[in-house]
Length: 148
Image 1 (cartoon, rainbow, N blue to C red):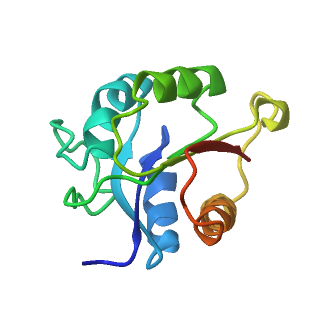
Image 2 (image 1 turned 180 degrees about the vertical axis):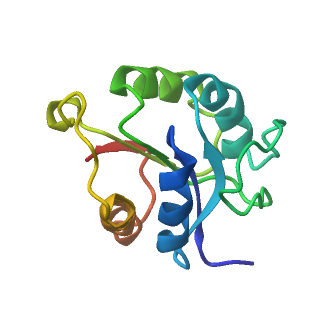
């Protein structure tokens, strides 16, 4: 049994998702990478239940190890907080263990047309690692939403 925390990353760009998933290892294992809200809506319920998401693999990000339920779901800034909250409400009760949902704070979004810096994957992984680490240190026993 692996001691890493199984997580799902939702981001529009696999070019960012892949390095982020690699930078989160070994403590946090990206088991699945989702690139659209529609895919998130259909796949997250399966992933929270510890099941195969029943979808074709469209990217080469994540381990695709569905033997343990996802305990954390991280949404990139391409996902609207209102959509994340609606999805979380829809899947409430599916997971047997508490899960943390991490999403972009709408008050801290990048201006339209802003280009992320070259070290963006490292920045994203650092923020995710800090938030996930804090949640784990606090016991990983609360269903909650954390904003970055």
